Amino acid sequence: MTERVSVRHADFDLSAEVAALRAGDAGVGAVVTFVGTVRDLSGGQAVSRMELEHYPGMTEAAIESMIDAAHQRFELRAARVVHRIGVLEPGDQIVLVAVSSAHRGQAFQACEFLMDYLKTQAPFWKKEGGATGSRWVDARASDDAALERWGLRSGNAA
Amino acid sequence: MKVQVRYFASLREAFGAQQSLDMPAGSTLGALRMALAASSPRHADLLAPGRAVRCALNQRMCDEATALVDGAEVAFFPPVTGG
Image (cartoon, rainbow over all chains, first blue to last red; front, side, top):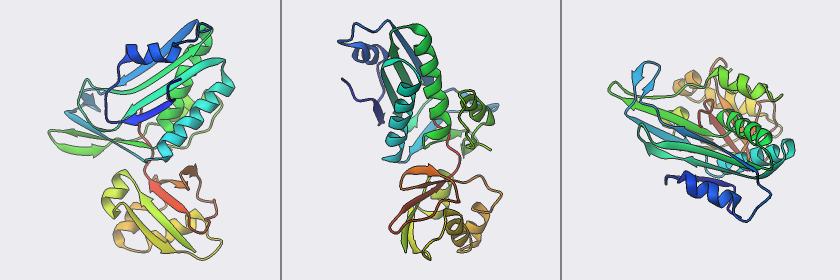
């Protein structure tokens, strides 16, 4: 079985990740994936580069515990999160969440749950760069609201 | 008791990656934040009570009422923005 969490500079291959996630498990009936990518526009400003910082050790541990929580809440066969760090450009992939389950309902929900959790509880910080310089991205209250749909409080942006 | 303080993102750029300091036994993370805020005008500004600063104790998210432990690794950082 592949490791559940990878925080790294290198890009990922969606097909290879999905193949590895369900390899050897014929009980899987559904795989849901989410891929987040760098946009070239943020708050009306053009973005030409994005830098991602993390908290080595804590970031990986936080995502591991999110995956544990997803397994407790949903009937999952497996889950995998890849999150890139370092300098990225518009169009680059940033994050992958992939989950497998016997049926689609649990897989769709678990994928969204993991993304909502990750957006507000995993220690990553984005810095956007453009023609007018660079700035740290502000957290969004809407991301806290997204996690609260699952009955979990998040005071990240507040 | 001695604690190691780490900063990330905008706070790391302002204060450096880490520092260590002594705190009275029984202090909370909130008390540590106030002690750090008193250490320079820059710290006072960026760690002011109205600023959105999140913290972790020994690499777990926590709130400022949490008590410090000797030898702890404490981190202060802005709200997270991954994903």
